[in-house]
Amino acid sequence: ELPTADSRIRMRTYVLSEVSSDERSKLLKRPVLKSEEMISKVKPIVDEVRSRGDAALLEFTAKFDKVQLASTVIFPPFAPETMQIDPTVKSAIDQAYINIRKFHAAQVDGEALVVETMPGVVCSRFARPISRVGLYVPGGTAILPSTALMLGIPAQVAGCKEIVLATPPRSDGSISPEVMYVAHLVGASALLKAGGAQAVAAMAYGTKTVPKVDKIFGPGNQWVTAAKMLVQNDTDALVSIDMPAGPSEVLVIADHTSNPAFVAADLLSQAEHGADSQVVLVSVDLSQEKLDHIEKEVDVQARALSRVDIVRQSIAKSIIVKTSSVEEAIAFSNDYAPEHLILHLKNARDNVTLIDNAGSVFVGSYTPESCGDYASGTNHTLPTNGYARQFSGVNTLSFQKHITSQEITFDGLKGLGPVVATLADCEGLEAHAHAVRIRLRASST
Ligand code: NAD
View (cartoon, rainbow, N blue to C red):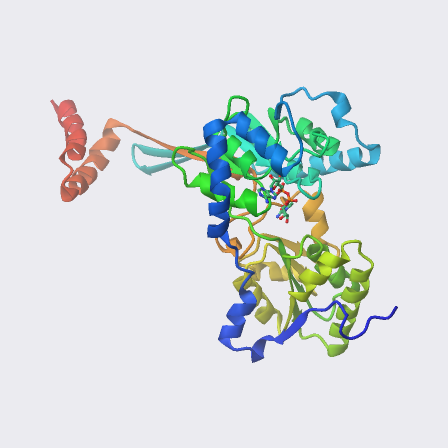
């Protein structure tokens, strides 16, 4: 059946030089996240798990995941029969593990930074792993062993002592063998069969059976995201989170050298994530013929996908922005700060220096986002919603923190002490000045 003009799966088009600054700001916006409303919805769940621990966790799992468990935590070694997977999938996971591990092991900060700021005054900075981490692997609608790899590998190479991996149980109460296998590969110290706000709360506060963690990582639906935001603000939980998360997004920049079928495939690989996914195509001086070609490819390829209904919704909310130069296109992209940025450009690599804001960049027509999503080596847990302006994606340093240190000799103190005493006097903090002068006096007698 031929699509009618109305039923075509297509994006809205804007010419960047013709839109007003108000319209431009609207093009840069994502759908509003109702975070306050969600936080008030998850608060009762978080409070129950905090006060009643395992009993509440089991009740919420029965209610939301429709499975009555006797206990929620499994400890290693995991039984081999729970990790039985197709050999082809196993070797794909193994290759992804090798690549992601190679890239993340290279990021470990293992060497102290040592700087003598004045003679006899030595300052240093060194990294230590965050001791206990909680990794949330979503599991409501799909199994996501890739997310388990992306969170587990940096935790493992950073040297975190306890790695708690949480994921919702399936209807029979088990965890998918692919996720179990990855939990085993990354050396998880506990596996929590729970999802949503209740899993986040259990890891933030700890229960009799669930170990408390120091930092919680991972994507998830709005229940998970709101619970992470809530617990990070509770000083009793004393827990931090990786970053605020929102619906996934891609911005593709394409010029006349681009392959329309590849461009369309990249747009759709993002659009199939969910109805709230954001897809933006920024064209650089493209002929109408080429643009029509890309739009036709989007429509034809979308119709062949099993998730066509999701794609129809996300593509309807997506936009094409026409620009007349690479500079204009990248300036728009920098303002948008996309989670994923794909460059279908002649000399794509040369333009990377112009990029100021993006979660991860895919350079050239043979670099689909899918490779970074699964197995090239880079992480797929990235800042969304414009947070690429100030956040990095999850990386090995997300699992380490830095301690600074200083050591001063007596000669060093003779040089630095008067500076410190003067500043302490200036601020009226006598004891501070005294701590310096008492030493200088003691040694001069
Ligand atoms: P999920 O694991 O995030 O959520 C499932 C849990 O949500 C359930 O266990 C349940 O406890 C809770 N829940 C569902 N409905 C509820 C309700 N009415 N009240 C209370 N709790 C409820 O799995 P999901 O729902 O499939 O969502 C996965 C999300 O993760 C998607 O939004 C997807 O886009 C995102 N994701 C992002 C990335 C990334 O890297 N950016 C990767 C993978 C997944």
